[in-house]
Every structure is written in C-alpha cells, then in structure tokens.
Length: 390
Image 1 (cartoon, rainbow, N blue to C red):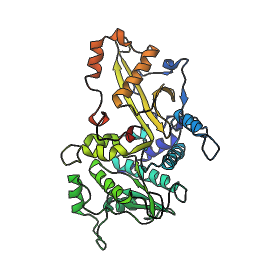
Image 2: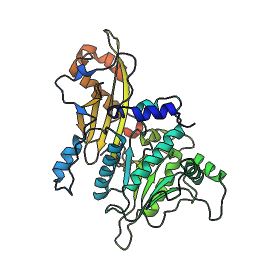
Image 3: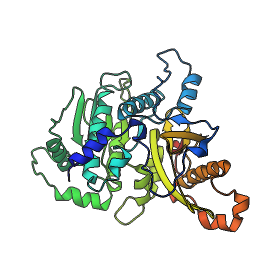
Image 4: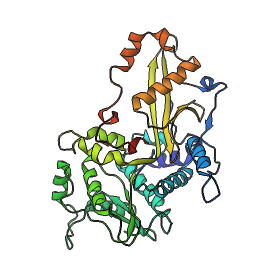
C-alpha cells in the first residue's frame, strides 16, 4: 500500500519541532508545568557542533555531543548521523548502528502507512546517508546500500524508479546474490535459507571496490548474512588500506534481538558472538508510557527518548509536552528499557507529578515493575561485548 495524499501532506506540513515527538494521547498527559526551573532542550535548536577540523579539542567535542539535542528535521538528522558515524570510523569502529524513526511520529501511527512504506523511506534515507561518504577520508571506495536479497532489491529499484547506481559512488544492491546467468525474479531456496535462520548458503560475497556497506530492511533471520559478509571483509588489506565498514541502518536491532533463540531464528549466541559488537553511533528511540495515580486525572501519560550521538553518552530525555525535551540524566552505558522508564519516572517524582517511592510503598512499587526489568540480552553476559552499550 502506498502513502496516501493525505499522509504525504501531513508529513510535509508537520512542525519540524515535533517530527520525532510521539503523538500525545487524548488522556491527560504531562505538560510543561513539570519542567519549571529545569533545563530544557529545544528540539528546534540548530547550533553547529564543534569538530576537530574546526580546531575543537576532544574534550570539547565530547562535551558538545553529551548535550546535543535531538534533531529538529530530517535534514538536521542526516547531518548529525553522518557526523557521528564519521567520528566512530575515525576511532576505528567498523560495525555501526544508526537508528531513528524514519517518518514523523504522526505519520507512522496512520492506518494507511504500511511496513513497505517505511521500508521505502529507509532506503531513501540510507541512499542520502551513503552519498555523504563518497570520496571522503573515512571510506575508501564506493558505498553499497544493501537489501536482503535480489528480489527485494529489484522491486525497490522498480518502485523508486532508480538505477542500480543511483548516484556517483553509490550502489543499491542485495546481500544475497544468485549465480551468474540466473535471472529468476523469485528464488525459493533463499526463502528456505532465510526461514532456517542459518545464513545465506554461500550467496553472500563482498563487492570489489566498496568501502562501506549500509544494511537496510533486514530481519533477524537475515542477520547471519551480515555476519557472513563481515567475516569476509574484516581482515585488513595487505596494502595498508582501510577495513570496510558495515552500518546497520534503522534495522531496529533491539526488536530483532528479542527474536533470537526462537524456532527458525538464529540462536541467542548470535547476540554474544556478533550483534553485541555493533556500536550505536546515532541512536534515537522514543517510548510512551502510562501510569495510574490515586488522584485526578488518575492516569498520567508520559513519554521520552533515549538519544545518543557519538562520541556523546546516552541521554535520557523527558518530553515536556511543548515540543521540548528535558535531559534527565546522561548514561555512559546504554540503559535497559526498564531502567530508562524508571529514570523518567524518577524525574516525574522530583516534579511532584507522581507520588514518591516512600509514599507509594515498596509492595505497590514492586507490583508495578515486577521482579525482572531487563530482557535476556540486556543482562551482563560472559561472552558478549559491551560495544552495543557504550
């Protein structure tokens, strides 16, 4: 299903300051009154970030990244995500995650917006991202934007009316490739391999002359193909060239990790062996919550986001309901979602919007949160890397 004229009109007419803010429920929600005399971050700020090329010190760059506000527009988002990825590559990182909502929140919640609409938006954004790395110091060679298999790539090329090389130095292609001369549009063997969640069956090959691979629209069952690609390109070249970079672009890895270990999916060891090594360099995830209270309006809706722009830390930001975010705390380690929710809740307690813990009672608080507030992959695991949290 394609985006309707109404959807497109709304997407274009949305105020940029609310582009990444979840829509407010009709129930009573947190308003700006909860942020009196508190530092607020305008998400419409557009202050240039200090850079090493501009003479800034590493400490100045770190401090600026620690307080960088969420983007006010997709243009600003693209610039910020590219800048964060460049900084990570310059620090020697080769497995990168870029994650943010690909469409404004109000559009994503529309009934006539399909998963394929989101996929097309991600491909367009990934192509723009890829163009920023052509002929740069960080990347040697071309940049390939890769869909899981050839059939998906062919459909996307047709729908978006693009050539396989839509821009100079940018290639739109697929992870899995058939044998030379195999012109079939649909390959049943790829479907079988994907359902088994056991890799590509030998159809993943690096592309000569490519220095960055941007992976889009991949499922948990297709992630082993990315690992297979990484195993083939991770060895530095003998002539002293740079190791190619892989970018996991808007794959919702947090959601995909939850599928690991299920029947026909890769095992949980895949997180420890590979996914835990992926560095989140630009990360914006919004969350909405509701909480019952003993006084009118009895239900309080609140929302916030975890935001990180490398080399900055992970910011827990509370949406004040006025197009602004207030920074609650900075985390050197990415907080688990349960911890993130508790950080937002503590901020509301400080403002008096909800009862303090001692007033609520230990038993009632335990019943709200439960015994375990983390998923299995958020726990410390002996064989896992900490890259995904730092």
